[in-house]
Image (cartoon, rainbow, N blue to C red; front, side, top):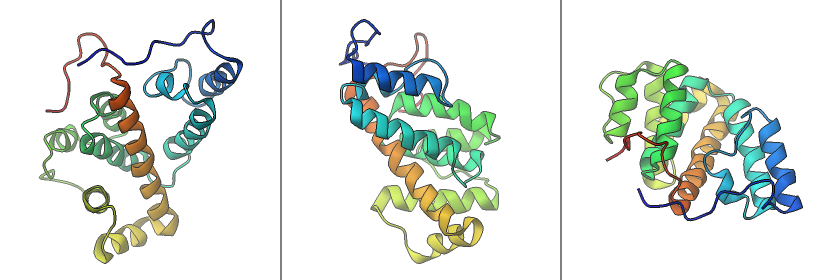
Length: 185
């Protein structure tokens, strides 16, 4: 991977607005550290604050079960070939109970061979959304029947949010941790 495009901000190099947003991120549900897109996003503190609050909801307040939400997140990371995103959320997806075979198929840009009904429902919806920017009636109806209208909107929110995060990571050229092999080809 290329070198990061943004120097790492420290408390000494941050503006007052950047410090305020960094403190909000670190005191929230993500815990300590400004990992992933946040070092880059802090260049626009107001945007970063809105993005981090949306991200906290999409990850921790969604009506979609964590295993399926994380599957949607890695699908967004795969779409944008966001190495850091896929690396970070693959681990979270597995911890939430997603099968490694499903995560590996998504990494290989292939439809997983064996999925539970709820996984197929989310996979079909997210695949079509990422491919076309919309969803036809059958996958919409399956998500609506399974998770309700809120679930439809929460799933679109996760895909949209993690598309923004993936693009930010790619533009910023956020590196993988030392020694980690890029998970996506």
